[in-house]
Length: 447
Image (cartoon, rainbow, N blue to C red; front, side):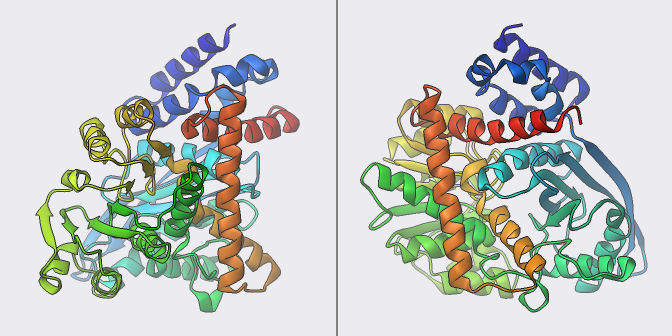
């Protein structure tokens, strides 16, 4: 059967088996569309059913999470862990706590994680987890009780050589600490089963900065390839979490000027450049909304609603908030305003239509599975440090991170060129990540 027919059949099977999971459908379609030329050159992948096996998770776990709030009320949420593919190593991927979480989002994230982890060059398979629990507005005691209940089920399915979760949206150092404490209490062992831990008890330097720094490193490499740099560039960033904050920090270090940040309510625009000390105080210390920024810096403006952030004129756009936040109309606005590069700091923040606009207009576009791989890369480095029982310096870890991101860029660029799509980093990243996983699956037989 021809490669295109195989791809169509696999995608139809995904739609049939996973009804209503639109984010998962979108992620699978985007990858499959890149792979026809690979299957044509490698018929063994077709014979071994690699695509059919790769789009079906090895294991899907759904469980009840009962917990008690501070008023004594009993609450119930739903927990998930999707262990998608272990061909390259133990499952690795974050845990997301957000009201929007359902099985389809976890599967989309886990599927992306397979190729993202492959691109890092580290020995990590792909997985993802989470819950529809919302930590916003909850006390530390409520979050602790929820995390302990969540881990009271999850512990059965994870371990340092099986599945190593990390943080994601809604899961930071506080949540990782509570979950790790419960895992340690139940299993009676201190292992590197979770990453994103505190520095005093097994965490890694650069982990907080990793995704933001890593994204800027790979965009910097892409700009360098066309004779440009961040120096003097105006940059628009969405989001106001770790990714956005530390992407802003690295852009500033490289001579660029970040003029926007956002949260789920709206965005700020500071023409003189966003003041990171203020943002860190608001978001990391006070845990308040980004609109508080304009009360301190009168030259800045706050606008309700998030989509308008892409109306601000910029040279580089870095969407770091959530999936499908940047649509076709916003992409056209960015192009009209002279944007030359877009790097995805979030998972799939640009719609397929937006990506098409960027490609049609020769805008450098770096997809999330490549651009935001820095977080899981440093998680992998944390695993290495945990195994050695030796912490690395900030400088060593940062240098390893930059090397990984530069290598991802070069491998994606080379794969795109080799398969006739020079400059298309979506295709290049998909192919480079896929081939490594597919070859490992071939070598390991029917598993």
